[in-house]
Length: 227
Image 1: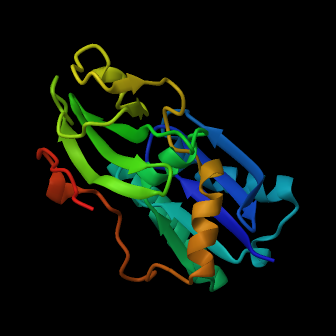
Image 2 (image 1 turned 180 degrees about the vertical axis):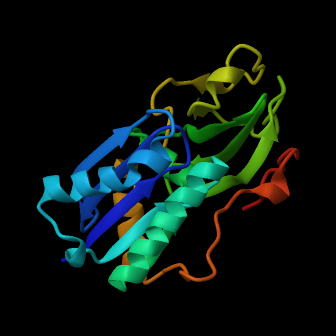
Image 3 (image 1 turned 30 degrees about the vertical axis):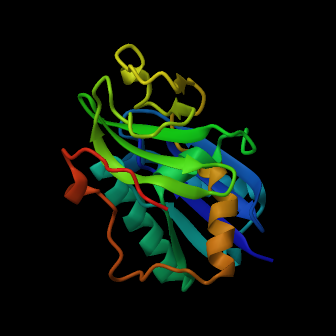
C-alpha cells in the first residue's frame, strides 16, 4: 500500500495532502503571510495526524516544483528533500500547471485548458492542455499578456488560475472563456499525478534536482507546439 505525501508551495496558498494509491486521505492549507516558512511543517504534521499515518509509513514525497514563487519553490523543495533523505524514500516532482489543470472537472470537454499563474505585472506562467488525452498543445512558458495573445490557437479554451483574471478585461481572443474556479494549484489534486509517477518509478534525483523557475523563458512569447 503506497502512501504519498504531497506538498504545494508555489503560490500564496500553501497546501499539504496525503494520498493512498492516488486517492485523497486528508488535506489542509493556509494562505497567511509567510505561511511557507512558518507553517509548512505544521501542515505536514496535521495532515499525517489527521490521517493516522506515521512518517515511517510514507512511500514517497511529491512536490510541486514550478513554475511559481521563488521563495515558495525553495522552501517546498528543501522540505521535501529533507524528508526524503531522512526517510530514505523517493522524491517525485510535478509540474505546477499540470496540478492546477488536474482540478478541472470537465475532462471530457472539447475545450482546451489554459491554466495561468500570476508572474508579475501582465506576465503569467501558462500552458495549454487537451483534457481528452492529456496532450500538450502549448508548452509551458512565461507569457507577457497582450490583447491578441494565443491567437494562433484556433480552438475553444477555458482560462483559469489567478493569472487569468488580470487578462479578462483586455483579452480579445474570441474563443477564450474565463473561469474563477481553481485560482491556485492545491496538494489535494496531486494524488493521481504522483501515483502514476510512483508506479513508473519516475523519481527525481534528490541531490541534483532544482526548482523549475522557468528563467530561460522569462519575457518571451510562446510558440505553438506542433504535435
